[in-house]
Length: 297
Image (cartoon, rainbow, N blue to C red):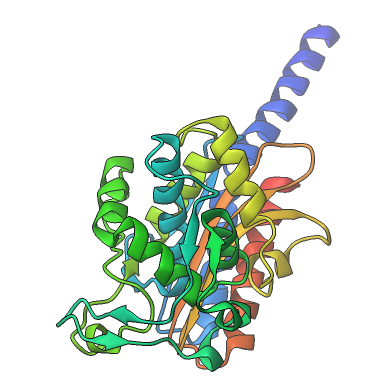
């Protein structure tokens, strides 16, 4: 009799723990909603997918935001796709220039060195750089010049076509960076938290192209130099493979988090309407912290 009671008690304990684990992201959602409400943001989108438990957490996940520099992730994926098909070589040289053409009327425009987070390439105009270096600078330093050179090479419409093939149905990559005429005409790159999380999940699970390509993209994303968002809410030295995006009152971060002792999870936080980047960065970090507490405990 006592043995039966002990078995029932253990079953109840492990059942409760399993239920708590399964519902951990659900338990985090109210805390995240409080953070969002207190932030004063106009709009916040959150999408989380845990590859270990298949749990998700979604808040305004389908809302459309100006993509800012998060559009550089789809560009990287298209380049790797072309490399996999032998249509481009990652070591192919690309001419470095600062002259591009608006998608509105074909007129010339140039990028502002002072507005670019990576100014090194501007000193190399007239020279060449391999594709893989431009990818690295586009992701890790968020180089606008590298981005425009790569988009010109692979074409925005091909990036969009890949996104649809992968099931990212709302993300739009229409153009390069700083096309002011396109901006004024409302022709902007846009994204959703859902789509960015979907893309990063494919990479995290080695389901895009092949393991080697995914591991190389994770390596590049892990070298990100701007870490005031998702990584700032995590224990020191936690590996995060991520891509940020910032323009006026827009601050995004989307990444793969490698918490110790478990499979990774994917998190995207998109914010709109917070003028001070320190405040929006703190909001992203606080949301990141709540997710980590929920899945990594």
